[in-house]
Image 1: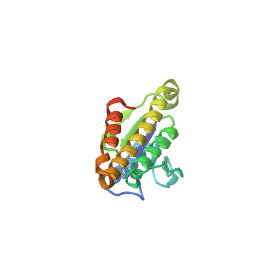
Image 2: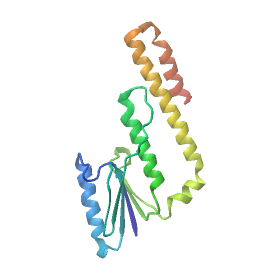
Image 3: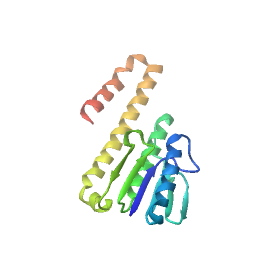
Image 4: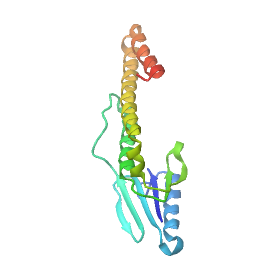
Length: 170
């Protein structure tokens, strides 16, 4: 059985309880049933190691998503890493997400991901649309902050743009 673990925390880059949990979970899963199972960890970082039946591949892309406001850079970097991990994921019988608040769950996967993605190209197109929308929203929020600090009378312009983005998605 192939067990894939996706996490943003894995040794040596642990900063909380979720990372400790994943470290112990990985070790225990690797020792199950005389180490018959392959454990593949995809995580944030520069890790690249293999021992017995455990393979750890860190993701640290060279690409930085452009951002008008440096405060949003961490979100964009996380999204880029998520995309790299999603594209790197191979066949798995069990998939465990961790260290992602909205995705803290285990999911049983009965087939490989690649055929599913081939049949669901619409998802990738939607992802590109979402990233464009997110970029436009980030730009409008930046402009709102600028107008609030420099030209309060002009605040209605970025507010109208934000309203349009949120209500129509465009």
